[in-house]
Image (cartoon, rainbow, N blue to C red; front, side, top):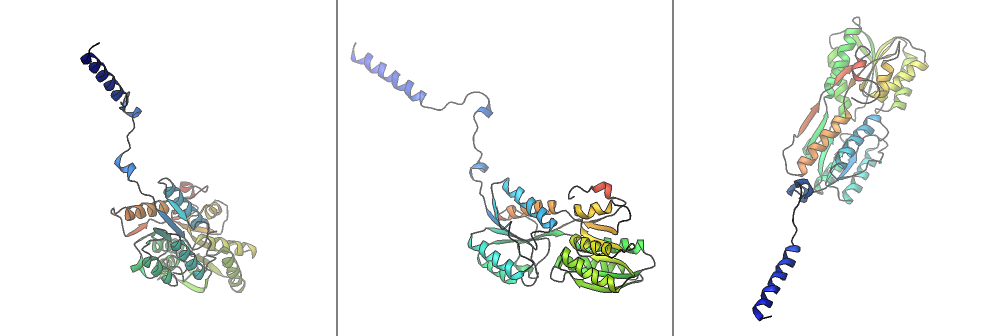
Length: 329
């Protein structure tokens, strides 16, 4: 065999090996997946979560909605199991711990809308984005976005219903929480709705949105006043506490209003001769999902709303079938 033939054979062999080493796409397009530019550059974030009370059903549902939405994108959340015990000092301490753990942003519902300020300052100094949820902080300049329910309307619809149900007026008890701006707005909406009607507020107590404290304070008030027409409560746990107290005292004719639209209170609306007159409903599920969308858009440099208010509406015995009692709306 001459030299030219040998060179030709070697060249053919080299070409075969070269082609064998190249990847060849075969079959349909889905058989040859190619990562999109978006998938290759996807960024994950670490979030903090801090709310008023861990054992409040509303905040439990809100936290779960946030966690589930973030988990889909591979993001992490810390602080979900932290309880503030209704203490601003404890909440601030927890937030400082989250900053040390390197969070990129925080979902924050303050125990006290004024006392939370030192935590806001620390978050800003650490360049952590603040997504204020459910109840506003006093110093909104520190906040990057706020997402909450239309709390004033929640109180307004309760007040309007009371005026309609009790045209002759009567004595009212208010269970409030001055340290929570969301409850302040609800009470303001309620009071404005009953202006000009023959109602008189004879007692008001700060029950911190807590069921046990609401039960204790309501029982004291009702033992001294046997002619109360209605009790306006800043949230559903307070309304349930008032409801328990009234039942323990054997009271049969009183109207109790709450705010949340919780499954627990909606179940009471189904019962005959219930003392629960209604609950102004909000949706912690939608609030949580909306908050996550805003937060991710913010961190990704995309457009987002700096303030978002979700609708509130009254659920009563007359329309309870529309919303059901087995979950949140």
